[in-house]
Every structure is written in structure tokens, then in C-alpha cells.
Amino acid sequence: MPSDLLDSQALKGQRGLRRILNATGYSFAGLKAAFVGEAAFRQLVTLNLLLIPVACLLDVSRAERALLIAVVLLAPLVELLNSAIEATVDRISLELHPLSKRAKDMGSAAQMLALVLISAVWATILL
Image (cartoon, rainbow, N blue to C red; front, top):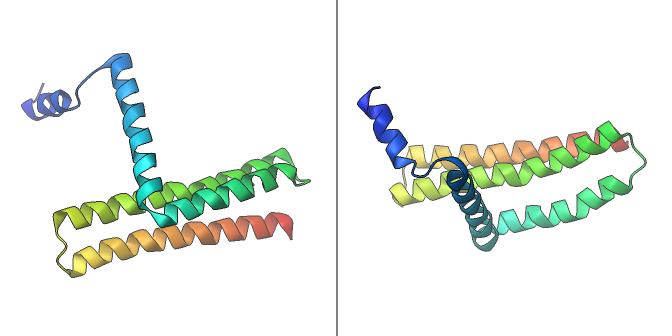
């Protein structure tokens, strides 16, 4: 086995159930960090808390209901990735740089497209 593969496996830590438990803990820590530190994430959680029950109450097919719920869950997912990009860029340097701006702008654009998708799907199903 190549040494770089062995090195990357050694950095991953535990294996089996312990690794799954560790990964779960890291995931909850990430959700907590996003909720505490990112206003946009909190807003999207609020949007989900409103729209998911509405989707469950609407007189639509199960497939349409699943789609309505899936698209609203997409927005916080994209926000988590966007926030991770922003944190990484800021960790590297707070200096204004065109590549840093590009990375942050692209993350923001991804979030905007997710919100457009939510609007389009909900409008298509409800109107």
C-alpha cells in the first residue's frame, strides 16, 4: 500500500462503531456551531420549522409532499457548506483577496439558487 494512503488512514483515527459515534458527535458539533454562529442558518431552521408542517397539511400527493420537504431541507444543507467555505477562507487569511471573494461569492450564489429552487418547486406544486 502506498505510504500516503497509510498516512491518511492513520489520520482518520478510530474504526468501526467508534468512528461512526465520533462522526456523529462531529456532525452535531457542526450543527450547533452553525446554529449558534450563523444567523442565516437560524433563519433557515425557522423557515423549515414553518414550511415542513405546512407541507404535511397540504392536500398534495405523497411525492409532491416529499419534494416540498426535500427542497426546504436543501437550503440549510447549502448554508452549512457555504459557512464552511467562509470559515476556511477566513482561517487562511482575513486579507482581502480576489480568490477569497470569489469563493465566498460562489457559496452565496449556491445558497441563492437553493432558495430559488424552493420558491420554484413550491410555486409549481401549489399554483
